[in-house]
Length: 197
Image 1: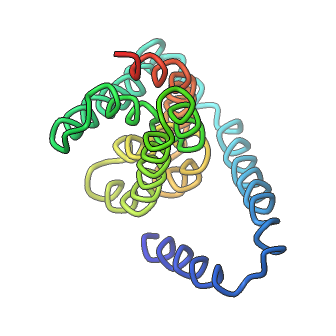
Image 2: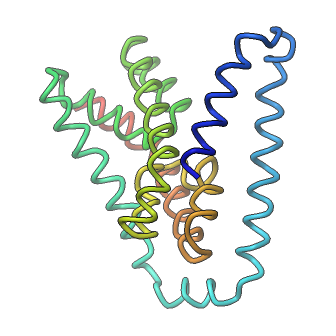
């Protein structure tokens, strides 16, 4: 899976040099349609598996521990990284609170703070998603299925969900969706809150 992902990214990178501007303008729409089809398939798979919903009911509120752990870990880690590189802690934690949702966190921080911090948030969260995609096969194989959810953060409900679903099982895919949904809901709350401190 890792080699397939790397090959796809590399091929896309190579094609980017040869495609016309008109073709590239349609790329966003094509990507959105392809992602929607993948998510539809995953949704059908999850909806048809009755055992998943029984497991979800048994877990109850404990299901929210995973997104809280992933979110807390992201914020603490970026706070520590901010200290190491000499960035104010509030800026580092606000960037980390993007949880991989690069478009929203970048725009929020550009408006609330500065264009430079917005660009930092954008690039940091793009790299988070890219590293998640590249490391998930290794993580699933060597560290366990549930741990594949953490690297993607908020993207585990959409762009990285197909990879998680392919590498793990339906229960983990459902946990990934819930985790991504909770983290996505927290981004517009935590990013503005943390940048103020």
